[in-house]
Amino acid sequence: MYADFAAYYDELMSEVDYGGWAAYYSSLLDGAGVRRGGPVTECACGTGGLTVHLARLYSLTGVDRSQEMLSLAAAKLRAAGLTVPLVCQDMRRLRLMRPQDALLCTCDGVNYLTDESALSAFLRSARAALGPGGALAFDVSSPYKLSAVLGNNTLASTRGRVHYIWENAWHEKSGLLDLRLQLYARQEDGLFRHAEEIQRQKAWREDELRAALLAGGFGGIRIFGDRTDRPPRAEEERWHIVAIRT
Image (cartoon, rainbow, N blue to C red; front, top):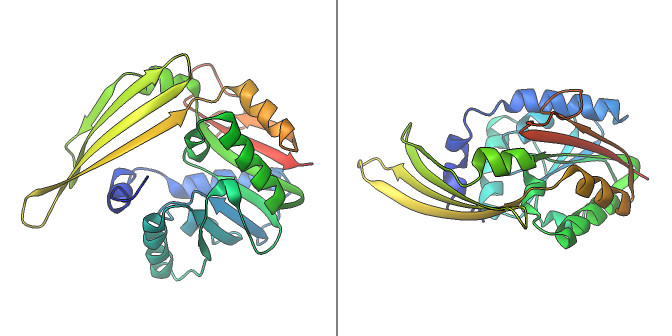
């Protein structure tokens, strides 16, 4: 996943307010007692859009299993004059140099853990990487978003250099969404280069997340609506979750 797609990721995500996301997550970590400047790892850091902002607040490490995405993140960090260790690892099997004050996993990273064993493996790995009382913070696209907003819909765009056709197939019984993204990137000679990305996401319910966190050794679980300090509403498209290592 994210091999050919990596080169186009930033253009497709150009409207994301990474600075706002960093401010929100730092406020969540403040509330969990995580000190500024302490060791924090960002799992599934991708091309480093959020990493650049978080690195100014914490002693940050970036982790992703895509070497292509990490290469782009490294260039972005160098351009910003920032030094951040970037590690190519599966977040279900973290191997970090020292205990972390907090772990983050943003932008749907947990949705890509599509069964209970994968989710449990990540939570066990996260707990082992955290120091006592350390915080885990992550977000998920909600069941409402995956089923009703994306659902069996097809999205398309011809704006900018990269055009796309995004087809979605929702499976109600399993709570899985299959995504097929066709990318067409305009080259300097005016021709288009084609790339295809196939992905699958899981619509985790609130009770499933709470049960998995408790079983994984976390407590103090709080679930918020999209970048708010209130519980999610019925048609909230994104949830943010904070839990403390027990």
